[in-house]
Length: 303
Image 1 (cartoon, rainbow, N blue to C red):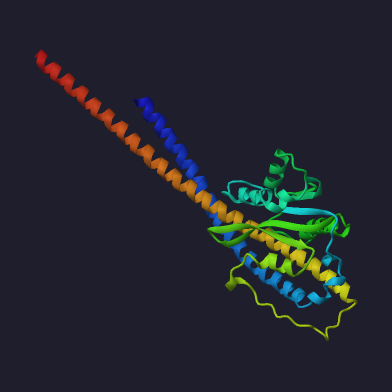
Image 2 (tube, rainbow, N blue to C red; image 1 turned 90 degrees about the vertical axis):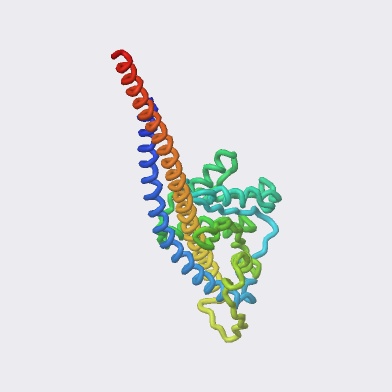
């Protein structure tokens, strides 16, 4: 009996220690989520402004290599996931969004290329023997422009070298602290469909209003093609950073909820173990009283 009490007491202490860890992780995740949430939403406005500039000059796209519609080449998929776990179903949803999509399934294996950003995506691809042409992990949370450009330049190089005919990003869209969902965005080639793929998952009240002008008096220097090419590169950089920030906001949101659920589960386990502990202790006390009373009555009978 005493052995059971000691074992339960150790279990309660262990669960309490675990609860302290999950509670601390919950608070840290909530703090980081709030920071990345504000940054992700702010980055959307910048991307929308760049898309608006592009949308107002769609008539000039035809001369840019970034708007070239190609019939030959591979399809490049860029999959975002986190480096760490303990963030609920985030990584599973992102991975399934790509590998269970019709786009992935209908693309012949020899015409697919995959770039993974985040350790979880690379681990999944490696365990399922899916070829990965580039892998980036350990991307700093305080993503500097230089860090982003180094990754973006590698992605763009597949397009400029004419290896691919399409570039598709798979990343989460952060809606609120409890809701996110994966989206597939067609980055290249640029067209009106590209703008829609970026904005199509937004609610009507979230969608920015674009003002279309012919810009007949716009002066481009040094040339129209050069300005548009730089604009495309800036949009890709901005969309990459925006997707990364939304990934981090979704990651810490999911981790906060997961750690909150773990903390609640620990509370329930502690409550159940305490109830069992008290029940066994009460039974032990009752047994000891009964034994004392039995011994006392036996002594009285002898007298």
